[in-house]
View 1: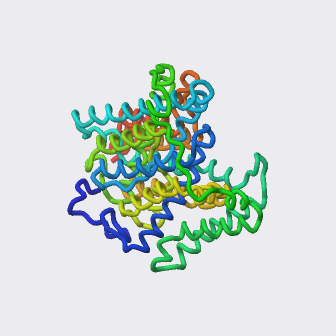
View 2: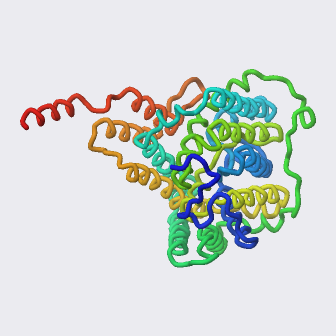
View 3: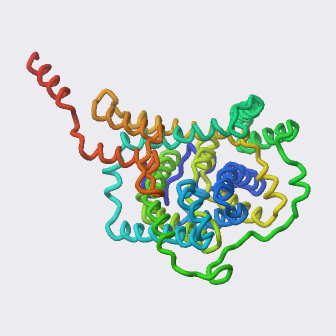
Amino acid sequence: MQQNQDDFHDDRAILDIHDMPKFWPWVGLSLQHMFSMFGSTVIVPLLVGLSPSIALFSSGVGTLLHIMITKRKIPAYMGSSFAFILPMTALMKTTGYPGIAQGVIGVGLVYLLVALIIWLVGSDWVDKILPPIVVGPIVMVIGLSLAGSAATDAMMKNGRYDLEYFMVALFTLFLAIFFNMVFKGFIGLIPILLAIVCGYTLSVFLGMVDINAINNAAWFQMPAFEIPGISYHFKINWQAIISITPIAFVTMTEHMGHIMVLNEITGRNFFKDPGLNRTLAGDGTASLFAGLVGGPAVTSYGENIGVMAITKIHSVYVLMGAAMFAILFSFVHKLNVLIMQMPLPVIGGISFLLFGTIATSGIQVMVENRVDLGLKRNLMIASSVMVIGVGNAYLQIGPSFQFTGLALATIIGIVLNLILPPKAASEIEQEVKMHTNE
């Protein structure tokens, strides 16, 4: 795995990190990324009671900030984080957004503080605590833990199974696979976007899309900015800060998992270059900005990582284009509403492929590094990580602080890797018997 990007070009990629596409392919590829992340990014504010348009705006600006801070070396998209939904929902009923803002700003500051500490002490410890036997299963968990969400989107209408929904999801999935396998040239680079458009069109004919809402929407509308000292009076609320800020340590673990996936997809080591301190600083600055303008905390997105894994388009310029489209669409209200009408089965169908691709990247990590699952040590680590992570066996501390299945699985994998001996006692005994018999 490459540590320094400056002289490295991944020939496996159609467009590597610093490759700039031509204008029209650039537009299509960026729209593909924006459509892929849109559903999840607007679901969070809709569940909490925030403005989807400001979430879209802050995700776009946050992505540009992250790319700038990481010196244009990491193709990552920042979207609304699901980890903060519970405390944000509770605060929305008591303090309103001013309380949420302080928690989100606190999250950003915690990220920046940890980034500063890592910058001072270095990150050589990362390779020690995250060998392939830990990384592989964690990457698989990142994809597989989202499988339930994809299946629910694909099958369930208002909490009940809907065959028509599932048919639309399968139609979208099969088209994405077909476009991937059959088309070449520019069309072959945007299979996800084409599948989403086709699935959306079918949903319109089946009456799953509220056309009147799109027709009646105004063309332009200012996002609902919430700026401290301007939109509301700023007063420190320690309860709000404490209820949200500690979750930053959970999302940091998830962030490291996403960086692991990007390492494998792009053939680089982003923990070394540009460094974990910069990746955390990028995430932290993005959340800090979101809290200052009215958005939720943000984090890197698995959907966009899945798109890169499928298309082999790793260009940061494509991600920058997606961010700029997100900012633009946050002001173009009719387009905003058009995308907000995206049917869940379309999202679910495309997610089957995106999340599955991430999971298979984890398998590839173990295969390429020749991880021996015949060793009990490796088997114990991989088995524990995968079942805890995929099963989402979370650790709940207090009413709002929760270590998700992914975060808990990552911590357990790291701990087991550090404390377990290279071989089990029974394996050592067996080796001794074999040598004695010889």
